[in-house]
Image 1 (cartoon, rainbow, N blue to C red):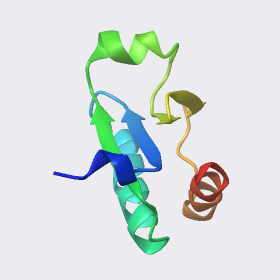
Image 2: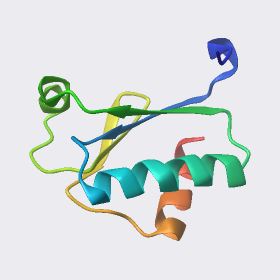
Image 3: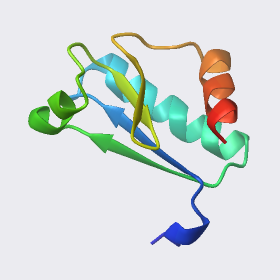
Image 4: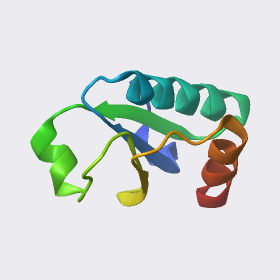
Length: 87
């Protein structure tokens, strides 16, 4: 279990299991590790919870409870830039 007081970024990937959603989760985990960020990455698959973020098309990316993007899979470099911006 991660010590949450040291977590700076709370990254959530919103999606019910499509290929793009799985890819975004994998890329997020890879980028967090590569950039050595203090972050937790989780997957939200519950449709009701996804809708609470206002997402109409997946995948969705939420950082620290702010919806960053939805409906597209960013390329890896773009994703790293997003994570660094919020770090």
